[in-house]
Every structure is written in C-alpha cells, then in structure tokens.
Length: 94
Image 1 (cartoon, rainbow, N blue to C red):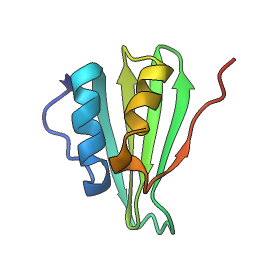
Image 2: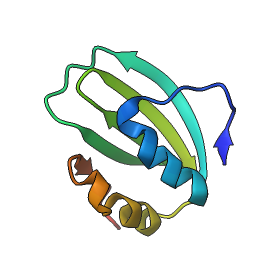
Image 3: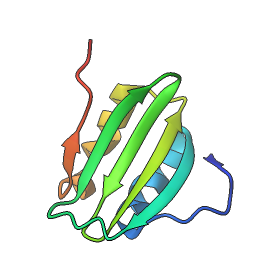
C-alpha cells in the first residue's frame, strides 16, 4: 500500500514499486532530474523503522521509504530477472 496517492514514479522504478506495493508500505520521494548516471542503480540503506530505496536511472533519481518489509524479502524481489539490468547496492547483514 503506497503512502499518499499523488506522487509520481520514475520509469525505471515503476515495476519495482508495483511489486513492493504488494508486500510493504511504500512512500514516494522527490524526483531529481538530470542525475547523469552511466548505469541503472538500486541502493538500499537501513533506516530506523524501515529502509531507504534509491533508484537511479540515466536521467533521473528518486528515493523511496519502505516500511513493514525485511531485507530477505527485498532481496527476493530484487533477484527477479527483470531487475538484472540494475546494479544493486545492499546493506551487509549483521
């Protein structure tokens, strides 16, 4: 379930957020244009009470906050074939 209903999602993140919407609460962040990245990247950072997911594409960057989901659940979704084109930066398990 997505927090709020008026947020836009960058094209590179649409399918990922659609899948995450089924398993956790997703809060969409601000879209930053002109990211100028050479590769598509998904980065996950642990926060108190959730996760920060950053998706960077060729020309845009957007942060999302995820709640009520575990790292293994996130890793399972990110391991799906449709996300193979992304470089993934995940936190080390402690």
